[in-house]
Amino acid sequence: MVFGRPPDSRVGDEVLWEIDERAWLFIEPNAARAGAGRITLAVAGLDALLEGLAAQGIEHEPIEMYSNGVRHVNVPDPDGNAIAFAEPPDAASAAPRSVGTGASP
Image 1 (cartoon, rainbow, N blue to C red):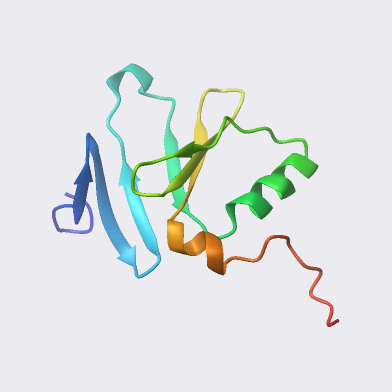
Image 2 (image 1 turned 30 degrees about the vertical axis):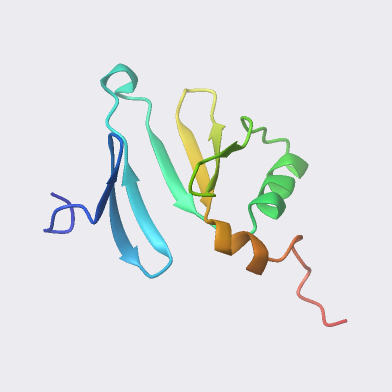
């Protein structure tokens, strides 16, 4: 148990807890990768995020599209750990396409 309660959802082997209206914790058991973890963060604006990472020389694996419309991508590090980003289908249309400078037009 995490947060003193059972998971809010299960998707295959993954277990999910809703932390906030727009924040979920995904845990994927994988004994073969023990010591090489992955954390998944739900985001809006996946394309802009990946463009920003690419501008810093950070590469990512191909974007996957799940049957429920979620876009998912892994960003591995040299040690085999990965940060994964998942964009729900409703977040893609509401997200800005690029990161602004904060200056007014």
